[in-house]
Amino acid sequence: MNPLLPTLRRLALPPLAALALFSALPAHALGRLSDIQVIDRDSGETLPVYHHRGEHWVAGRPGARYAVALRNATHGRVLGVVSVDGINVVSGQTAAWSQTGYVLSPGQRYEITGWRKSDAEVAAFHFTAAPASYAARTGRPAQVGVIGVAVFREKTPPPPVIAPQPLPEPYSQRSSRERLADAESATDFKSRAEAAGAPAASADSANDIGASAMAREAAPASRRMAPASPAPRLGTGHGEREDSWVSHTSFERRSERPDELIRIRYDSRENLIAMGILPTTTVPPRPNPFPGAPHPGYVPDPH
Image 1 (cartoon, rainbow, N blue to C red):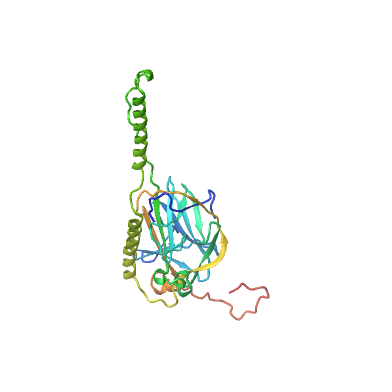
Image 2 (cartoon, rainbow, N blue to C red):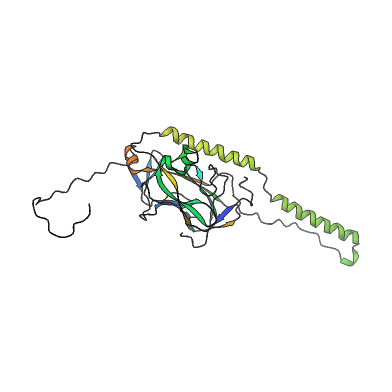
């Protein structure tokens, strides 16, 4: 599908949608044109982002629902094409840049909480074992464990071209043939102006560009890191249906290539520690100066 064609489906969000070796980024967000965060919806925590060997990682809790939050940091509209585990979160297709996504107004923030099922519903994202992920269950397990956002700026329409016209003769001195010739010239000028604004790229070439570029981006990451995990890798499940309303709009991209491409990898905390991405944090036991003292008789704190 041609990314430059205005007929391609885009999702418009409601205006008030709010719907060292080891280092975490303090802001917990990534991106220059759009701030990207991963939020644990069950705890309300914005997951800290860890940088390790050129990759960004977050630690998910098995079973927890999560959301991918986008905020438009520009002064114009942007399109965010979002993938989870290599799958477009709106269409369910194997992800490519040329596909549909979410359109955000300047400064707008939106939380993508699941796989879109309709204009009114999503199936909730939740962290689960890779074999139970939506990608694995649909026969596409190769990219489990990654969230991607391709951000596109909107194309600015060119200013209208106004050609100078000679001063007309008095109407009474012009023949009917001359008046007919002027009308035909005006029609030709309008047709040429409309043709100049039409996109020329073909749908097939646009899809080929997106697919091949995605493959080039993914290959180096798989070669750089393929560690053994002590526990099953995390993936994203296809959870319960939830209300989530969107509408449709048109959007013409400024370029076929994303203006910004963000990739966040995720796994369980135990696996990130095993891979050396997170340090082992052990708290020494707190000594008790009176270990033989009787129980005070009040409700103790939970362990």
